[in-house]
Image (cartoon, rainbow, N blue to C red; front, side):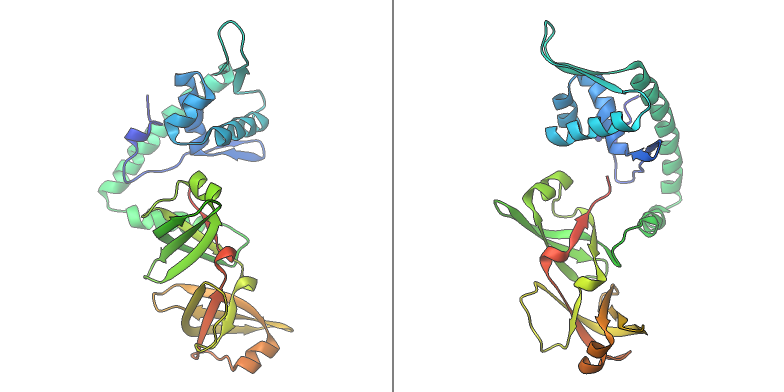
Amino acid sequence: MSVYSPKHIGAFTGSLGLRLGEGEVSDRRLRLLAALGQTGSISGAARAIGMTYKAAWDAIDAINNLADKPLVTTRHGGAKGGGAELTEEGRQLLEAWERLNGMQQELLALFERDQLTDQLDLLRRINMKTSARNHLAGRVKAITHGPVNSEVIVELHGGDDLVAVITRHSADEMGLTEGSAVHALIKASFVILADAASRTSARNHLCGEIARIETGAVNSEVVLALPGGARLTAVVTNDSVKSLGLREGGKACAQIKASHVILGVDD
């Protein structure tokens, strides 16, 4: 059963991970194990699922660390040359995963026929937990690669644009291309509020209406509603709220350095 092969992945997919002890093995890492069972090498398995060789090695190490017994053994040189293979525990695990994955694909097909794709995608985004106060969903609108860094323009749901600068290595690891679905994470302390006329060196200058201000003993949490519907939360001092004349229903602009935007993708 080849449920892990990229050619079987359509527009509507689901991820089936595995919890081992205190850690979790993602669907992509399980597909790596399946490809390794077919190719007999880590490099071949990495190529089969579009993962870098280093990332594949890191994934194998992490999987073996999470399991009670190693799921993969490696060979270095010798009469048969180097390579890697699944242990008996690894083969048993994959057999169970493939059976479960098959049942899951049948369930997803039922959901798709009932046209629940958008609702399920929304549920997935809602269930994601991060420490960043701002978690925005969107798609890559444009990406420009440099020798070290990549500039990524993300079109948020609603049409607002957000620019992020990440390392070229990170962009390659996440497989970012135009149209890729991404999550943008921004700490509230990284959002600087100002009036529309103020400008800084920050790459992002997003203006909107103040939807809510929650005042604390020292700081206030200010929620800015962007024209497209996205909301940004900033934490500023109470003195800044007064000096800037911030009020609910008033206008303000959020200035965010592109380097302060963290991008993530679903594994």
